[in-house]
Length: 99
Image (cartoon, rainbow, N blue to C red; front, side, top):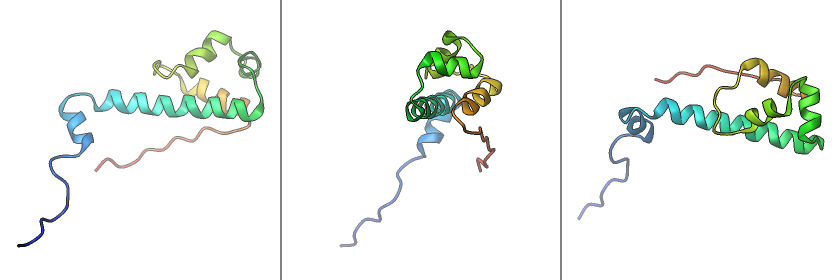
């Protein structure tokens, strides 16, 4: 008796999400969660309070809270750049092939 070949069954998870009309939303949420996590970790590494981080960014604490809120995907590139600069980092974005 031959052993059954191991491999994928069905489409990819991305294909499933696309079929369900959820891929873009899931990707936005994942990117925002990753960015918020990186900003939070950088703040901790620098020993920065939220008040000090907001001061360094020249913004309000509520604006910083929106940046750190993983469910709020409406953050601007300008805000992300200011957050990166406030912790001594640079923001780098990249387009990747989807095919």
